[in-house]
Length: 169
Image (cartoon, rainbow, N blue to C red):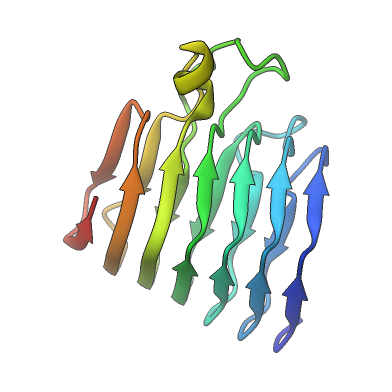
């Protein structure tokens, strides 16, 4: 549904996405998704965002089997202080490297996405030299008006865009 407020919710070990934001005009505050999408890595991950005009504040996608944040075919989405950490895992073992097919944020077919102070990190690379997350933020060619500021480290690639963007990493 739309016009909701979600606060301090944790989703873990779901076979598909931890959260699916299909409705619009909702606020998500301090929600965490980890170890989700073991059953379907391609379409799912930590957060599947499809609704318009949603705001995410201090939310985190960590160690999901698919992409941390899959944002697709939507408009006017804001991420403030959100984290994508070590997504794209292939096992629960923290010292196991992944196949590097999945990303922190994957932006597909979107218009108007704002990042403010979001963090892209891969603690597995830092602690175990085992890379999980491939690209920190990946933006496809059909997306536009993507802007903001990110803090990124320990990705294979911090930022990859096929569209015109205004992101500082």
